[in-house]
Length: 308
Image (cartoon, rainbow, N blue to C red):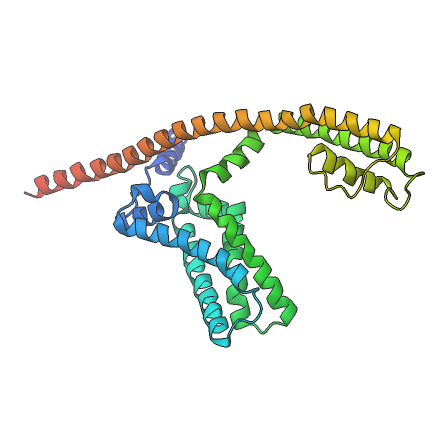
């Protein structure tokens, strides 16, 4: 009995130790978190760092187009190369900072697990690809095709803009929450496309085989017709083909409107939910910081009183 009680006591102590509150982050770490995740709540330095990161991403987007222009002078080309390497270093530092502050982004996980969760997340992989190829070509000799591939991979830096653009994040949330409705709408769209392409191929192929040479060509015509693009390079000439085209255009009005309505309703709902989440997260995080500061303050004061 005594041994069982002692074991239970040790187990309870271990559980209490696991449940013990995590040490409050330093002020520098909090400002680093704000600079990376929410510049509006950081101090002046955090805001400058956050805005500089955003400007650096935009500048790299412009750099992708500038490097492809023919006839660039050697001095300008060297400056662009130096800027690209400096950007890779900056993005590498950002990646390290995000690993460091991952436990603040995922407070429900241990620091090691939070960092692993960030490193394996889609945005973590994108952050890694944003700087790794640029630094790799600096230390490892590569061929010209490999260098071009590294430049193409750098395009993932544009995806980093999604952190600063609320609309891009909302698109992913709408896809995730309205997946059944979106899949059903696109299934109807695919059914209409396949049906129209097969019918148009069977009707128009005997008359103009050089244009409607396969069902895939009919599918191309059906997609341009349903989306009201209408390039005009493929046109039915038979009465039956024109009747199929008329029915396809008529049905596409309602079929294309279904996904648009789903997206519109999803965006309105997501923006409202995001506003509510932002307010709750801001209150919870600030309350957590204040509670930790309050827990540390009286304890230190009590020890000072006892020493006195």
